[in-house]
Structure formats: structure tokens, C-alpha cells
Length: 304
Image (cartoon, rainbow, N blue to C red; front, side, top):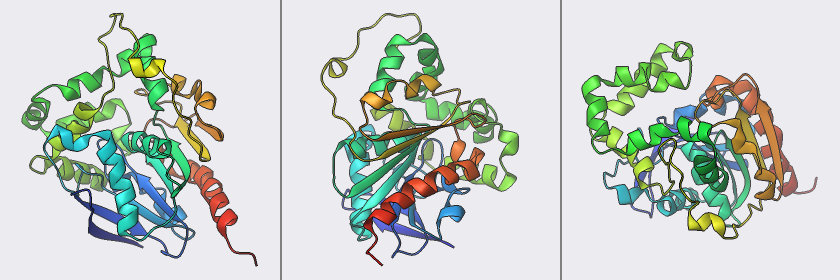
């Protein structure tokens, strides 16, 4: 059974958080991406809640959480701070982190901090920052697939979407990344209700506007950003990357070279899933997550 609670954080925002499972079980924080909410995990949570304490926030700027309007409120460091502040607010001393899409981007960043509270990292269709930025410079197909980011950053984009209608956004832009005929009517209604809140869509787009990722126009030669030319720290926690191979926005080349950036890495490919694998292929995703997350529980369990 899932409980919903609004939790004030010391980062200055209040998040709507779905909680499932026994708080005495190992904690897992699951982070959604754009344009979603904690309901990203609707096919995963019921399959994991018997064994784990699941913490599933609507991240800042989404759904039932606070909707700051300033772009500066979506700096990556603040978004990462929210996750550790949420753990503190719930009295969680150690946790695994699972992230999809933008939630995965924040999860990568959280792992790169090296905070000992974070014990395991699972990523679903979310690129490592180094590989993603390099691919946007060097790979024409990934650059072309990512041009929507520039559109989302454009001033007034949220006004255009509101004028066309959020049903239109669901049936066009969202539909480019998933077969929307597979989305139940009740879920469709929830998406549109979340997006239709006053100032909500601007808040969601601010994630893109605050990001430092460089997305050049097609056909333009640009140099690599300076930060890519310097040594980059490795992720040191055990890491599982699950990838829906039919993702049209984040191409499979995002998996190339990961072993050089992650010390303890496993990659699992889902050939029939797309970008929204957590609910497109919930059973398969859960089957991969359970033993990975359970390994940490086994390692920390007291001897019999």
C-alpha cells in the first residue's frame, strides 16, 4: 500500500512523496524524469514493496511538489541536495538510488559526490554526463535526437504548449517516445492534470533551462567543453544500468565507454522496451532491480 506525504526539506522546497513498504526494510529512493511524477514507478513499486522501503518523490517542479519558477532553482547541485535532504527528513541513514531520465541524471550526480549514505546506484535510460555531452558534440544521430532540448529551453515554450493544449502535447511530443495507446485512460488524465496546474509546465521546463548541457544545432562543428578535457571522477558504488534499446531520444551509444567511468558496473539491455522502460517493461525492470538491490540488503543483514 502506498502512502502519500508532503515533506518539507531544508533545501527550501516541500515535496510530495509516495512511500511504500516497511520503513524497517532497506531504503530505496526512486527518482522520475520528465514529464512525469512518482507514478513512473507504478509497475515497479508493487513488485518491490514487500522487500524494501520505497521512497518515490515528485521532484521539485513536478506534479504535487513545489513549483519554483526561477531557473536558478533547478541547478543540478540543488536537485541533488533535495535527495539527501529527503533522506535526512525521513531519518534514512543508508539508501540505494534508482533513477530514470532526469531522475537518472540526478542519481548519477548524487553518486559522483561519494556520499557514504548512498550504497547502490541503478539507472534506467539516463546517460552518464560525460558520455552524453560527448555524444552531443561528436555523434550526429544523438545530436539530432536531442534537438527537442533546445525547443524546451526556448522562452515562452510553455505558453505555446498551453495554447495548443496539454492533450496535444500528450498526443504529439510525448507520443514520439512511447506508444500512447498503451497508457491507460486514468494515467493519461493524471499526466494532463499535473501539466495543467498553474505554472507547472514552466517549472518542468526549467530543468532543461538550468542544465549546462550543450546541444549544438545539427551540422555545426563545436569544440568539446573544457570540463570534458579534464580528468573526471569515477562512480565507485555498485551500479546497474538498465536500458530500453528502443529509446528514440537516448540512443544505445550512451552505453559505450561506461566501464571506464564506473568501477563496479553491470549493464542490462531490454531489446523490446523504449525510453519509458519502468512502466513499458515494469516486470522486466523489477526482475533486474530486485537481486541488485537485494545484494545490498544481504550484505548489511545481521548474522543469523
